[in-house]
Amino acid sequence: MTNDVTDADRACGLNGRVVEAAAIEALLDSGIRVTRGNALGDVTLRIRFSTLHFSALDVCVSSTHVDIQTWGSVAAAYTRQVVRAWVALDEVGTLISSGRREHPLRLAREVRELTERVATHIRLANQ
Image 1 (spheres, helix red, strand yellow):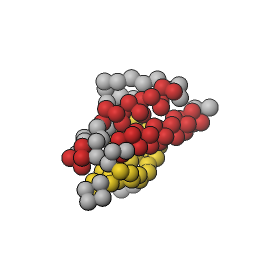
Image 2 (cartoon, rainbow, N blue to C red):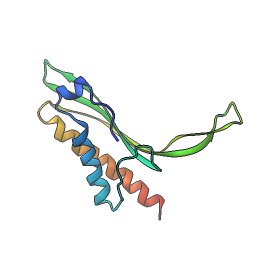
Image 3 (cartoon, rainbow, N blue to C red):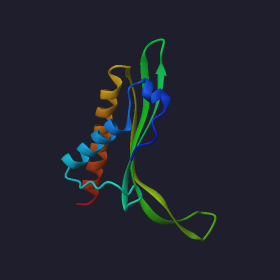
Image 4 (cartoon, rainbow, N blue to C red):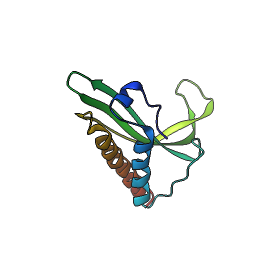
């Protein structure tokens, strides 16, 4: 599941499908089953990126985060009431910059690498 693509993302040639495909490929290559459709299922991989395009230099900079979340029961420190909320199980991120033409491929590679890190954390936690 990716965030909405902004005008700055589009100016840098980015779209959610390419980024999502890189993450799914990394999960499948790591032996993790991927189901689609219900974004609010048991466990959700979330990909977030925010991009700036510096037109004078034709350079793009993206802050990129990959996290895995699930529903959990939590209680805030100031109350005893337990509520269901999204709980982040793992999160990794990076900041990348590259020329506008190279940026889509660079972001896809970074999302793949970040997703591989999350997949490794999942495997280690389930040993």
